Image (cartoon, rainbow, N blue to C red; front, side):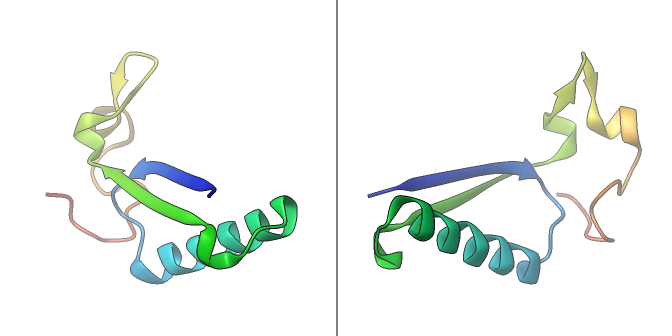
Length: 74
């Protein structure tokens, strides 16, 4: 059973997550020749205050709301 774990910053809409799940599942089915019901997917979301690149916290590096489409982080 293929398992996909997507890790990303908080801020994507439910519709974006639905589309991502559909596309990733479809491609796993196509590439691995498995049934869609065998593909598991989980999305782990992290607040930008808990994510850093090159030693800099994203909340500081990119500013408030960066990439969050107006969704407030908790």
